[in-house]
Figure 1 (cartoon, one colour):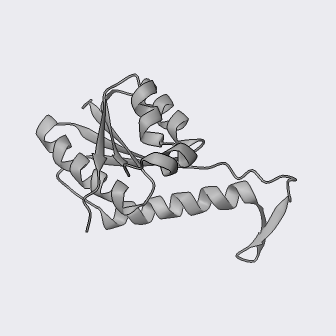
Figure 2 (cartoon, helix red, strand yellow; figure 1 turned 180 degrees about the vertical axis):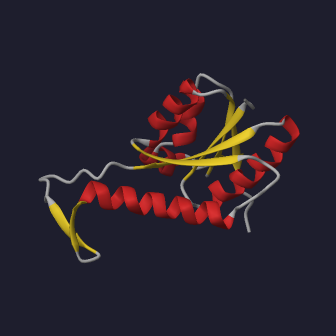
Length: 149
């Protein structure tokens, strides 16, 4: 079994850029790529119960999961490649914690992920998923800042 590179994505242009760099790195290192999309739990207080979605009453959690899986399938189709073995997975959770948990339980050589490079007040208010992953990951983390323009 080939070692893996873990590539978390959020469908932003920054994570797409990091994914493209992950594929290039995987070729050089002879690794496979595991793409991971973490979607936030559908937590509303008070719990509204069921929603009408596509003509059916469904729990919000199911709707959010289905949308995440559909977006991931579209991403996979748009980035189909034969040169590198790529698998895709969507999980519910808080981004940094889910990424670190996944990195600890697989045959991962490293995590390769995007960073937006926020500083100052934006960083203080929004925090940084990449920064938390760097601090907590059991494997090395390579952060990639997307090119501007």
